[in-house]
Length: 438
Image: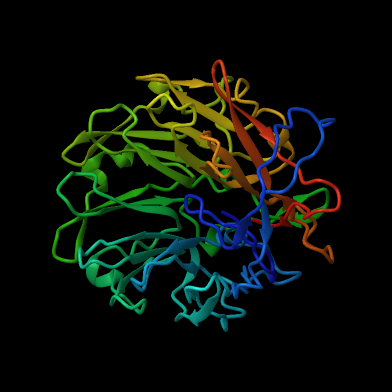
């Protein structure tokens, strides 16, 4: 997840949720090397033409001390909030500087789908310094509710069925005061209602902010600078509109980390939903569901806690899908500039690092990849990958956005070991890759 200073944000995930509207064009041919003939683009950006005109604001003030939350955030959800059968867009805003020096800021925006491919904005009340959003019918009344993660108290938006919301987080018991990033509504105890899993980043406050520099210029600090990994949270749905925090009894206290990404699937095929948490420079967590809302961290045993050299990568976005079409869920984690992606292939009881075999070791290293989604964009039967990118280390005095990077699109194709991804590039004279801070 990623935001930019006072300009339009391109893409933000939670785990991968898109704030631009892309329209598919033609499929592209494989492109295994830089000399291959580029192909036609799959997507063109028509967000503004369709009414999705949104400016994400981080609250950054030129010349002021950079505050770490300013480079994280900007989540979005595509969900049918008004029950008319088409997808609306909910975009999360940060907006105000966390030291209170520019407290007048816009809230989130709900873009209501008119049904003709165009959207109408419905501004929302300011509900905190926003990060991400999760969607689900937690109260079982037939409409989609939203959970907004914030730096500070989170919001639970109860939907009245028409896309109008009331924040009931305090009453429901899910107004966690930490720095929430990713979240998901999931039935983790198989009782028929949706529980809530929350990923937290670091135990941050203004009091522990640091003054960091890169090449002589002020910059944002690395999360490890603060030495304050946070504990994730599990809230059990009590079936009456309220939740109980069962994080400690679930075993989560054993697994603090700098959490950014979240994926869920039944990884070990035992009928229970498991969880994968990507952590930023702390070890990843694979929470295997043991039943009764008890979880065991099996990341080390399954081979997905650290890289092949025993180091923790800067895990950010997560895509969980059956990449190799063998019937079980694999995990793709996208990481910081200078690090490869991490493609964890599920081989039944353990993950194999198949990043190199899948062709994901070279092209992404030049970018900081905050989000990823796996989807068969060209309808050829194999999953493709879209990655949303944006730097974290840039010259804050620059006139242009110092964090902007092109997003990446990979085409998946069959190979003997399962699947291989090749970068798709637009042909000269057609739509250029998006270059934003995603």
